[in-house]
Image (cartoon, rainbow, N blue to C red; front, side, top):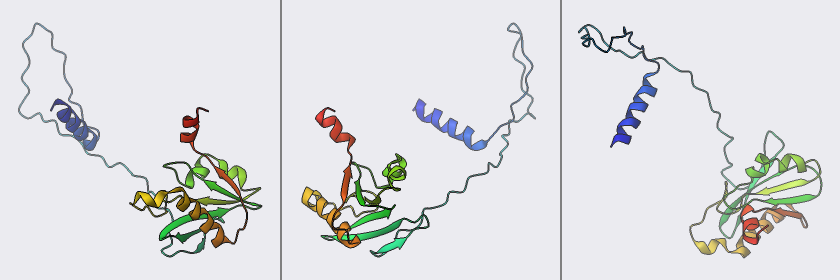
Length: 180
């Protein structure tokens, strides 16, 4: 209960903005407290704080296909066994498939800097694994067997007309499991 009261008080203070603090004259410890005149009020002042405008990312294409992004990134979807798989392609050179880790997405390759470092020498094929990113998220555990996940990668490569590619996958979870 005490925590709730403190939390509500903190929220009220935060919402009220800067309040005008009353001025007070120090009272000696031996003197009796001075009564507050009935005309004194503690009215908080409310100030308007400008907010930042957040720009939404570009909309995901509604139908599977290949879309040209403003940054020369091709983005599309392919269907494999009834599941839509999202992928993006960027860079020049031999094809390199990048598959992210558990709970990740293809965007993680950009965040950690691999995409920028590799796209000058490779045609990067970044794939959101089923259940991750913009790919479909089936509820049936049988939809996540290794053969279906491998089939997703083959479906993307087939859609792009790629017969052979380098493969780069990373999992911090696997590193922990094998003790590296």
